[in-house]
Amino acid sequence: MTQVEDTGLVPEQEYISGSYRWFTYAPDVTGLRLICLEDQETGTVVTTTVANAGMRTAAHRAWAGARQSRAAGLPWEILREMGQKGVDPDQKIEEMFRGYGHASVGDMARLAVDMGKIPMHLCLALFNEGSLNSGQEKSTRYQPRFGKAVLHPLSNYLPAAETAALGEEYQAFGSLSLSLFSRHRERLQSAFSQFYQADTSRPDQKSALTSRVLDCVRYFLLFGQWSGMSFETSARDWSRIIAELKASPIAYYHRVADQFERLLAPSAEEEAALHYQAEAPSLIRHTNPLSTVNTNLQALRRFLAQQTDLLQVVRIERGLPRCVEQRVRLLGSEWTPGERLLAQYILLLWPGLDRTALLTWVRHQTPEVKRKLSGLIFADHNNYCELPNFARTTTMTLAVESFLGEMRDFNRHRAWGRFFPLPLIFGERVSRDTISQIISRGFGLPLYLSEVPEFAEHKLAFEQDLAAYYQRLQTFLEKISSTYGDGIDYAFMLNLLPLAHQVDLWMHGDPKQALYLTSQRVRPGGHINYRALAYEANQLLAASDPYLSAIQQDHAPDPASRDEFFDRS
Image (tube, rainbow, N blue to C red; front, side, top):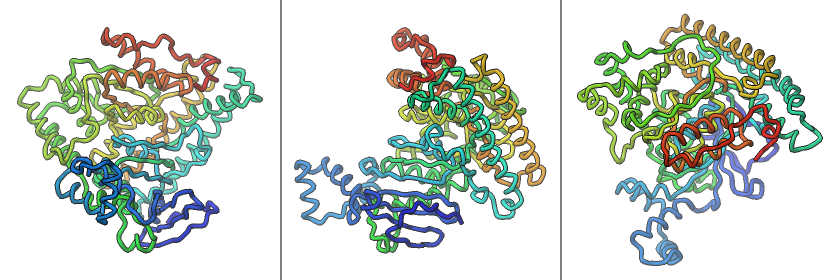
């Protein structure tokens, strides 16, 4: 059991319900009444605030909004009618949401949840799956606690026997990560200060120096180290995300899904004990696992392996990881949205497939095979059971090949359809082969080190330490494989990927988002790697169509520029 750290604040009340620990804070302590729920087995903490302890506020707002379609009155008249009749908004919207299938009412109830002691990959998954959300994740640039980040416990992924056998070696990767983080932070602080001639007596330059150094050394942080986030979206979206998490190939996500549902839709006994009226529980309850995508993926795997030549024609990379460069590709108009969609489904099954060869294979299938593959993808999907968010493919796709650190930044552009081939929400149980394909993608370096000759010595040390880390990771994986074979779930290995790890992100957009993304991310205040990616994307988009040429940026980011280094605009 993991105890919530001592903040010095005294909870208003506590209540134990099975493995859950509820605790609340009064408004005079936290501004709004704060409802907290700790899973004492995983250590994960989720919280939400309530504006009115005696009213389901979000449900009330949603029902008042829904009444606009049928009630003739003005807003205050509709609300007065609800008050006079003693309308139970939770009951009414449940009837509309579930009884009549009018799910849009669920988008009118907004719910916010804050989370602590969760792995970074859960933050990435939630942002990727959210469609109407807003939120923030703890930044490796501004959060000093990342210098002491705890690796997510192995017990959240494996049974007790395997945890005991592998726990010490597993945790050693977390210690190594923090050691490398600290070592290179000290070295780069001095090197950057000297090269860019930092005047550390000036707060603005001192702050910029610290941020640039942290942007680089975060590459040694691990995907499974503790983070935290605030996530706000509609009740309808929460319901879908909870259902998807319950069907995830990662067992820990199932517990998190149950915890979200418990927080947002507690039992009557828990509400009474805590004097807590949840905001809109009727829109959250009865959320069954949404396994359609993963079921279809299993059928797709069987068909592709047994009735096509995909695995004989398209190479799968399973080699040793190496240092690679980042880049952006613009998928041309010759690829249809459907072809891009199928390629994404296939990459969830075999993430090591060569991307270009895969797209070519997809395009050249016979009409009969294409119809069969379409049937496998769309099976059991309809207006009630929608396709996954990554199905928002368009004819404008940026294939960004960069590193987990940068993917965390680009993933927040939620107006784009986004896809990355990691089996977090969608995919099959993580096997040894899946992990080998993911690891083989390799790792990258900050452009300050790879592009500025004066940092050649630091580049070499950085690259050597990452290469040594991956060598150790490979040895660990081989040991586990020889001991357990396929009888173990390898999802925990995702925790050990450093933020330097190469992952591609496919972003499907339109001209409006093309202008916004490239203008936003190319600015000097950002990390040099994603600034360079945004500039490269901008050049590709501007050259792809004469009617997009006006968005072209004139100034390429320069890692050696002192002015850009200290510019936080």
